[in-house]
Image 1 (spheres, rainbow, N blue to C red):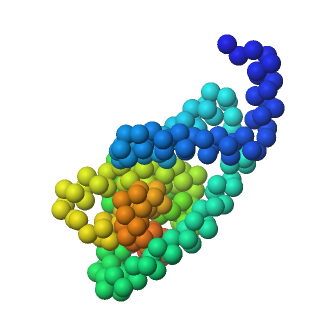
Image 2 (cartoon, rainbow, N blue to C red):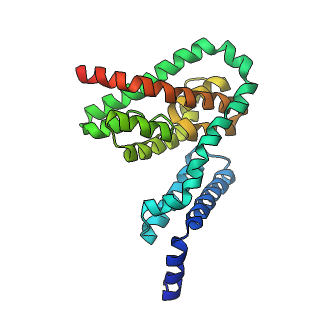
Image 3 (tube, helix red, strand yellow):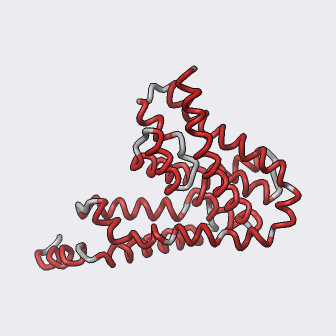
Length: 242
């Protein structure tokens, strides 16, 4: 039972930005501890566990998302430097990257086009509204880029952000099983595929497998952002014509 004193303390703390930053870090560390305890099982992705914990906290406390984001936005800011830092492990793989430049370029185009066309086709077949379809189109791109693309093509950026996170978690969970079933063993190829399909969350998972997988996943994540920004408007224009 929540006493008036506890309620007063919560009202005070919930107004402090540091509370939500702290809870975000605690939720992730708790999720990661569970993830590590169970041998890094893909189904126990720490990002997914942290999201469940934070959403539950916001729902139970009646806290608006904007209040949470105002406190935890420093984590959002760090996404930029973290993405740039992915160039460091990639530099160590430069020789292999140069050898695979042509096939990876082809895989990037095919992967980017497939990610856009497949979701548009499935959404259209299920009768999804146009605004939602446009929000779905960039779902395989990292969140800041995806939201920008969605805004430019007429989607709903906030919906796109949710879909991007769901895509990343799904990709991080399923990638191992799909790639194993396809018999793909090369870590550079596995990492590149994960980066195209599951952006930053998939890249974090790839780094847990090996530095090579993580480096190529980070490369794919960055390149797919640029490719999708160029291809999405063109494919959507073609889609409307057809």
